[in-house]
Length: 552
Image (cartoon, helix red, strand yellow):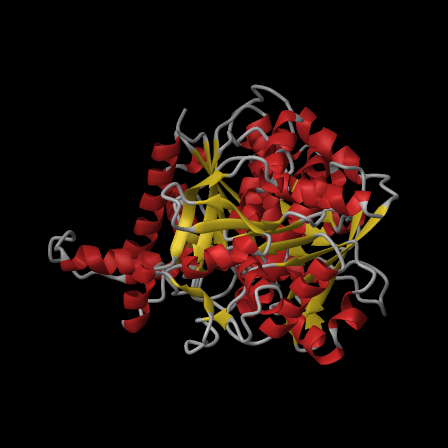
């Protein structure tokens, strides 16, 4: 069977849910028996997502092979429960650079290299390479941005050109917005009509339209869209706001979207297995017990708004671990600057558990350090992720080991006690201002020490069948960091009760720490949230939530 290509575009506004739509369709087609390969195309000129501010771009997701990508790849992995790679992501910057490099090597035989046709053809080549390497039945390309933008026009042109030569193998799915103005009280379809007109100008007629709105789209609205967008009413699907993004696939499936997609390209179902997914989503419904979790960061405030996308993987990992234990998380986003200004007791009291996630730079770190100290002294379950681990060791150094003023070289290069220092190979990169893709990235092995809380967590939840990808004592987790614990202080920490429960195979790099006489005080240099999935929730998040529940 020739590979089928699905292009998913969006209209009117960003943040519409194209990523969840692409993830849901990928899950449904996989459940129908087909091999899927989702890919995100971002229209910016950055080579990857690694150098962008999280407040502007959202969380940077890291693949097993170490590419820093858009957060939508995290959604893809969570929905289809598969590891993706650098082949599943492209930016306009990557595409243009590849074409320029080919031109420099005379691979175009001396002709005039132009935006069209060479850029769209490079995009198509990448899609075909992904199909070949993954032996994919379906390649599902989510096009970042909205229809009508100059930036993503080349991806739409690639969709048009590919359809010209492979008409029966290409489908265009358009995700469009229907607002509900409070003063009018009804969904308005004009934005959908406008974005479809913009697609028409790019030479594309959508085969399927998925309407995003706060509520279900009624037949009257569908008829209007069908009339003005030249599409059959049976090809219009509703995707309203739902309590959980994980309920979207089943909602689309109830409307028959899988059979409609397959039917339009001449295929039928091979299977229909959504049993495990439904088992998970059923746990979301009707959960009454609640758990208060505080996440202390600094990347979710933009003016007067709070942006959860900066820590989306952490948030989803917490939710998954809670739902599998029949509890509903009440997640509170806390700006670490507020902890500094008002004090940890006023801000942090009343939570069942505290998480300090990743971060960079000096702003707000004292609030995070204070959070670690508050959790340690008051025996509140604490999970420190990457920077959250490093700052927990700084707090321990200052207040338990007596190393006054201890810090990380990232914040204070001249600190008397650099308990966190830069990794040796990173100094040269920073000296040359080589910031992009130079960190310690991707999956690295870690040896877990027996008779520790971390070992027990991995062992316990693997035996319960909720996570089957770990085989102790050696695990592999994903990383994204330049700094590490300074082994010069290792004995001092151990003498005061800190356990280094996870190390690199050569024993030189500290990967995980914990405090023995505490219900749950664990920090990891790696990012367990990157590998947390609905059907494979992460053992550390499961155990963190389990401890929070037992302490209520």
